[in-house]
Length: 152
Length: 260
Image 1 (cartoon, rainbow over the protein chains, first blue to last red):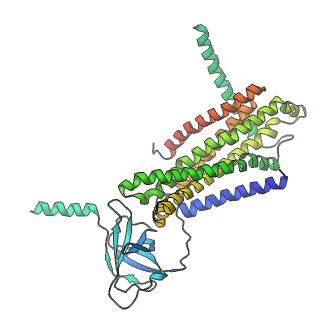
Image 2: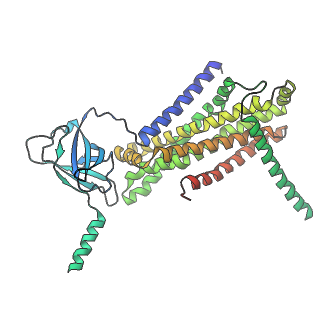
């Protein structure tokens, strides 16, 4: 094995290690660098997210049409704001589309479900979805149930 | 009866002795320098034979381990309707445990045994004594670059193992079993933290690389210079370093993840 070959393959080995490290940092531990080329962003305000994650699905009628990109707390209204990117191919969502936080199965992951509205105008980049429905929080439901039982 | 007790005592003293001479060997060969010391080119050559030559077995093993994790995890998680957590399961298992440990075991078998046999044969053919005759310290010339090559190569190999394994898991989960691509990667990214999981895994593999290479060079250097002795030393390298890796893994896991 020539000296050049040895040096070259060790160099390749080192580069592979670095690529693996970068992949671990970006792709696996989630320092995402995706570019938003073919998507547009809409925002929605929720009272309670109940465990919705960034990069969760945004779906309509069960078909995934986008992703949640950012979640933060609005410090003026004390409500959660969810930013999601919707694929450009779904650019005909009416302005009164409603968003709800749903759960896949009993223990599954949370996702945002969109239901289409009736208005003629469409959502544009940066628009807000006004009609939202928060996540079902099991503890609250049980609490409400117990409370109403106690009143009887 | 009395002989047996004496044998046990002798064995105990031997273990302590070899531990001492292994520590001395490590302390003397850790630093570079001195007459006839190995240079950077030697290190590169050793990384080639220790790291690059182990790359194919590591990559193939990682891919299959990832695929098996994906399949097994799926059959269990699908009963609870939480197959979306498969990405989390595969990535955390690989990054925290299987990546460093399986890589270290393969590394001991593939590179550690070769190191022991090579150094043992150098001793048997009196190359090491010849170096001493020329005023060259065989520790600095032979052991130092091999030790460092192992310490440098192991974390890289473990990282490649985990990366290929997660990719193999994604191949099974997303392409074969039809789990949503975003659920696999998204849940993984939500659960994996760079410092807590990736960096701690790298630290583990660093420690394992150090232990395996250390045992391998010591076994070679202290081997009885006959064909039987070298064979025995090679076996001993694989056995001792595998056990050391598994034992240390428990200690490291308890300290880093156990919350003890």
